Length: 174
Image (cartoon, rainbow, N blue to C red; front, side):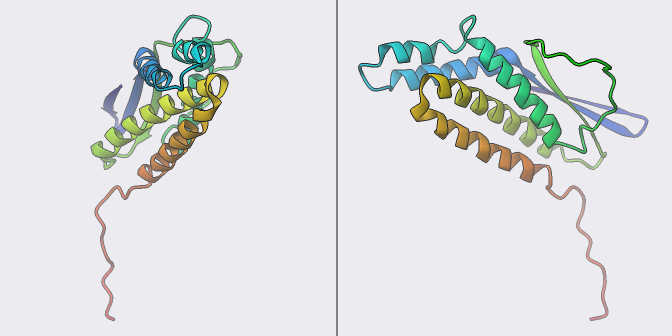
């Protein structure tokens, strides 16, 4: 994860960057632990669960990450609004080394809110990726990870609505 902040012509552009390898590494760790504590006698299921990052298997996670990054961009509107620049869209599976979310924010936007959003989005992407993989390999645990992702999405929505500036009460004669 990283956050690049640029100020130009009175506008602040923030790029939240999520390294694919870091997301996959965390998913592989979770899958390894979940497989390790799996009930005895499910050796084939354990093997499938723990191989989330292996060639071929990782394609499903890549597809989910691509979708969920797009969903995060949409969730962060109006900060991520941009004009259409591509005239042609395709459905080719892409595995970028870094997923970026570019936001235009006002100067008063809080650095701590950016930090929180960065951490929450990372957690959301990991939870969604692992929930999808477990839906295929370990359905008993998939719902738990899907609920964690949903709770994190709620936190993202709350964080983007945090008051940005100083609160000023209007004076009243009463």
